[in-house]
Image 1 (cartoon, rainbow, N blue to C red):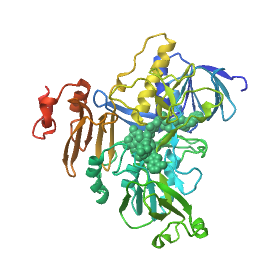
Image 2 (image 1 turned 60 degrees about the vertical axis):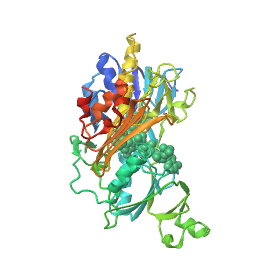
Image 3 (image 1 turned 90 degrees about the horizontal axis):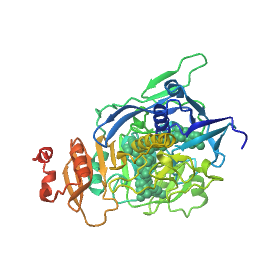
Image 4 (image 1 turned 135 degrees about the vertical axis):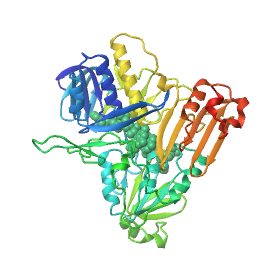
Amino acid sequence: MAHKEKTFQFVIVGGGIAGVTCVEQLSSQIQSADVALITAGPHIKAVTNYKQVSKTLEEFDIEEQPSSVLEEKFPNLTVIHSAVKCLNTQSHAVETADGRVIGYEKLCICSGGRPKLLSDGNPYVLGIRDTDSAQALQKRLSKARRIVVVGNGGIALELVYEVEGCEVIWAVKDKAIGNTFFDAGAAQFLIPSLEADKPQSAAPCKRIRYTTEEPAAGASQTFTRGRILRGHGSGPTKPGSALGPDWHEGIVLRGAEQVSRRVTVEYQCEVEKIFTFEELLNSPQQAVKPENVGSWPVYIQLTNGKSFGCDFIVSATGVVPNTEPFLHGNSFALADDGGLRVDDHMMTSEPDVYAAGDVCTACWELSPLWQQMRLWTQARQMGWYAGRCMAACVLAEPIELDFCFELFSHITKFFNYKVVLLGKFNGQGLGPDHELLVRCTKGQEYVKAVLSGGKMVGAVLIGETDLEETFENLILNQMDLTQYGEDLLNPNIDIEDYFD
Ligand SMILES: Cc1cc2nc3c(=O)[nH]c(=O)nc-3n(C[C@H](O)[C@H](O)[C@H](O)COP(=O)(O)OP(=O)(O)OC[C@H]3O[C@@H](n4cnc5c(N)ncnc54)[C@H](O)[C@@H]3O)c2cc1C
Ligand SMILES: NC(=O)C1=CN([C@@H]2O[C@H](COP(=O)(O)OP(=O)(O)OC[C@H]3O[C@@H](n4cnc5c(N)ncnc54)[C@H](OP(=O)(O)O)[C@@H]3O)[C@@H](O)[C@H]2O)C=CC1
């Protein structure tokens, strides 16, 4: 590595939610601190309209902003738009793709993740992560008659509901849809929404997303509401920040056909093989049934014996932490999922190096009611807490693990229903002796409480149940609920009064 051009007290890598929140926290806590934010993408992501809904539930909007907004707010901040290509933890320096060597006293890696694709480099397999990949999807979809979506998590759930004008084959590994968020009961509740037409008057997006359009020389920066616009200068090798809530509201997810939504779910199957039309012709033994041959650009063979031709395949199969540029020559401890292991102070195994957001894996002794999921909320919370830990270290102040890591909580929307997940919402790690209480009104609400040893340890609330705060309290209190039995979910009893 060449000589350091400058050493900053704090260097944060990544302009997504985790990195930006970390910068904001550090810069407000130690106003004199010299902070650098190094990010590969042309823009940064900022949290706006933050609202604490209850003790642990939070809601906020995300805005994609030019970095100048952050620099104006924090005069001691320098934003460098370049990807970090290597890190030397011994000399406390990072080198960027454009050849700059920046020193740090404390470093926080917030480089996010990238889609874990079924097949790397196959032009017919798309992943969705940032604005560029969402635009690529929109463009390809506009000419598509049939697509195959593989995966059973957040992106697949959103995509199969939103896509219109194109047949969708949805291949899931499990017996029910949405395995990362729901059990089979909730899936059963949601399935009719997939079969029905999307309500015309689906609630409009209450969040406003702004995307910056690069100004022409001499022109001022413009913001465009609700559309995703390409940020110039973000080439395919420069990963942008992850999309997030309502990412699909701003783009038209419409195929080339006149049909509305038409989704076929293929359960309990994985991908056996992906091959092109040319490969099919050259090797007629491929297991494609004659009615499916046609002239599709790509074919997918599933482990359930079925094969489909389609225009392209969306691999919605999770994320891999973006760690590569930091590993070479250092000895970071990695978790099984490939994330940088962090302790209860968000510290990695390398001295003075912290990490937060999708790139890290929480490896402290977790609260029995919290688990890591790679989500906006956790990226914000980790970035904020990492900033506090870094500041506390410099100021020689003690700091304890933040309360937000006590109870897992997530608010989102699937199939146009509000969804609240609390604690061990799917009985994660509870073993066979837990009990489920379920209340379901078709088309209206699905309420599930998970009890263990008579205490509530998790919940799934779908629809406008208005139960989130009460359930959150019951989970946090760990009160013995044995005597209430099924009355806990009795709709004729105002449960809030019950526990007053
Ligand atoms: C389509 C989609 C929909 C989603 N929807 C939701 C949702 O509804 N709710 C929810 O809670 N979560 C959602 N998520 C997940 C959420 O977006 C992520 O968990 C969150 O954005 C992670 O934030 P982060 O800051 O850790 O990483 P990112 O947002 O990925 O930011 C990483 C940053 O690091 C930069 N970077 C990467 N490598 C380098 C490098 N070598 N050098 C310098 N900079 C680098 C990137 O440019 C980027 O700015 C969604 C994700 C996707 C893809
Ligand atoms: N509203 C929300 O909260 C949303 C959140 N997100 C977040 O964005 C990130 C990316 O989303 P997404 O890609 O959907 O990731 P998720 O982790 O949510 O889901 C990935 C899914 O793909 C399955 N899978 C993994 N590998 C394969 C494979 N080889 N073949 C078939 N299926 C496979 C997983 O199954 P298994 O679990 O069994 O491995 C899982 O069902 C996640 O962190 C997600 O939480 C995204 C959209 C919306």
